[in-house]
Image (cartoon, helix red, strand yellow):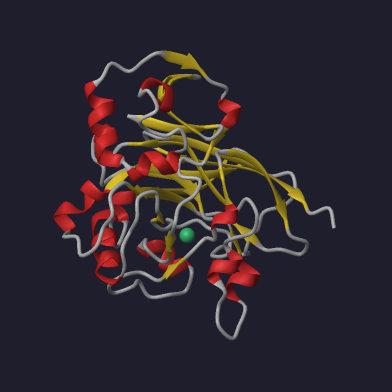
Length: 284
Ligand code: ZN
């Protein structure tokens, strides 16, 4: 199942620009806003899978927003692919990778225009993003997928100067400028993938491939991330996990490369879809 946020209303995507408005079709039982659907995820799945999907309505793809626009918590993992840890100049983590947040105000839908800060060193990071569907506390690895509502595409755009400024790096601030957390175009449930633990993902700038990877190369895959985090805290319905980026970011290049005004970044994940961000100069 593909589940979109169309102008704040949860919609089961049936085809291009066509879907079922969950609130209307369920007689008001679920939604309309995505947060309310994640809060009743188990009941929603039973309803969505047992009833005839309908009536099908057309929707405007320009209205697509983030699949989970109001997560209580956003977790992002650093250095979760070996080759990326190496290009960033770090040893691969032993245990849970470094965790930071992307503050919620940075979240957007799939197609946006993003301002580059003056003098900024803004970098790209394609990531598979997991959305939590059921609360998770002390969850076993083998049960962890049951707590995931589905997967979506994300880019963990990062302003490297702020992120790495001494004396203590400001990861969360450097990754939370407006528009730096695009997600979408929709959530896809894990049963839709041939192998939910081996999904291709990549990123292009103006048609030039800069990143390509597979989630089978994650040092700590999604079930272990959920299990490990849930040893420390409670994961809540609608929470996001940015699972880490493969190699090919700009800061790891020789010479380093950062985004410039006018460049367009396409971020894609196999079996889900793509994001498109156009970068412009800051007006001040
Ligand atoms: Zn990242």
